[in-house]
Length: 157
Image: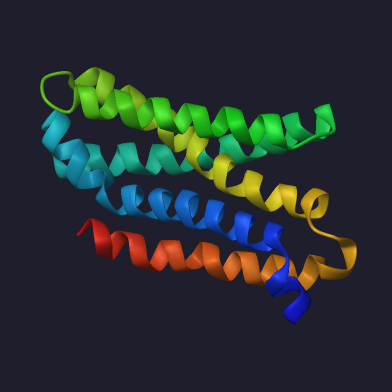
């Protein structure tokens, strides 16, 4: 266990997971309020949009897994998901006041890409961690990742 905790890739993967899962959970919890502020939608419409976002997220995960398996590598799929999420955050920030359709479109694209980005981290474990450290290193990395899901929503408010 100590060898896994000393391995730098465990901490890199954990930090990446902390940031990606933390921001994903934080925005997921804030999305209804953001959609209401940006688009002025009623509660039922917001519920439908966030539900659609969940279904899109499942599709994004499946597509990312399929594409990374087809290519035989994980990194480019994860990077494209990270870039998509970053662009969506930028578009939503720009569209927050006065561009409801763009905000909703960026939200739905974000929902499609965000969990593929997080699961991309998990898909990289076998490629980046030595075989003898994979189980404990993955568990340690996941623990750090889940701390992001716990701490970041509280930090956001």
